[in-house]
Image 1: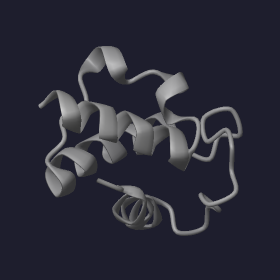
Image 2: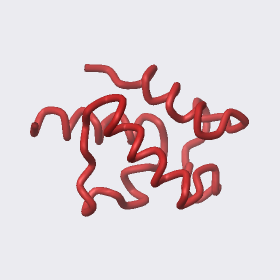
Image 3: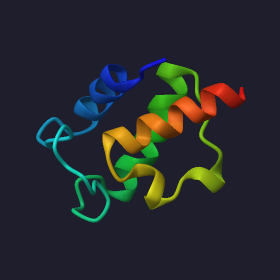
Length: 79
């Protein structure tokens, strides 16, 4: 399943001023704060029904929309 559109909607709800489409380092460029990361993980769980285990909540898995989508697809397959 492609989670891109749903993920972009969630991200826009969290911070509508960020350019998620082109940013390649959401963490390094401080587009997502630690608080927003917590919100993102909670919203993904609530809206998409995908729980992200604590050991997967690392900067490498949240660098860009594409990387987050890959994580979601991988986790969805494991469930």
